[in-house]
Image 1 (cartoon, one colour):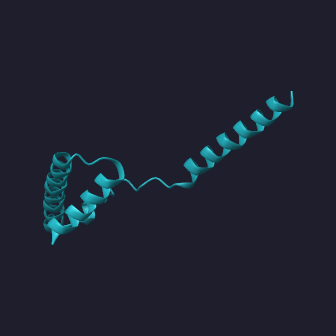
Image 2 (image 1 turned 60 degrees about the horizontal axis):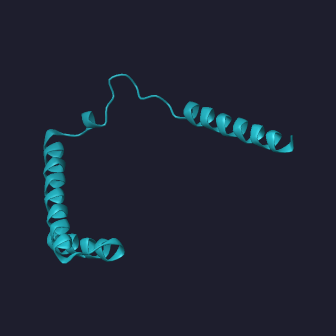
Length: 87
């Protein structure tokens, strides 16, 4: 009986916090968008950066695969590789 009471209280607190978190975030104004505040030049340069980072990331992954790296060693290698290639 006591366990059911504790579970019930926990569920009610969890559901109440979810409702409050949802209600606390305001909805964006109609017609407002994040991309609308960026100039076309900014959007293009952001897209180019995303493509180059993806290519660098893929290249570093290929190198890590060739070396047979896994887990922490792979993560450290990829971080260093990306840093070296972006310079």
